Length: 84
Figure 1 (cartoon, rainbow, N blue to C red):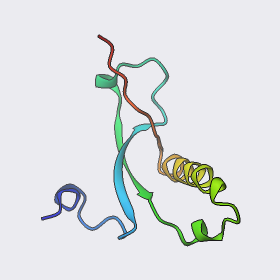
Figure 2: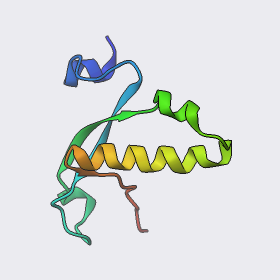
Figure 3: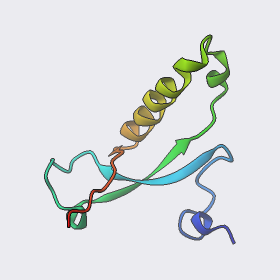
Figure 4: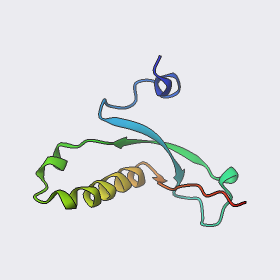
């Protein structure tokens, strides 16, 4: 069994991955342990990606699209930092 299917069933398309974002309601400065994770469907391939005229624009276009997808699903994308 595909791991995400175990928890999320068939809630995503083949061109999507499920990513744990942070609820957009969580204020800055909250420890990772206290954040409210929100599963979001992130599209790693979109047909519009092929429409870019300059391949240098593609990473920025994808970042904006993926960030907006997460926001529309009530989450923000973040990278947890550990301090030693």
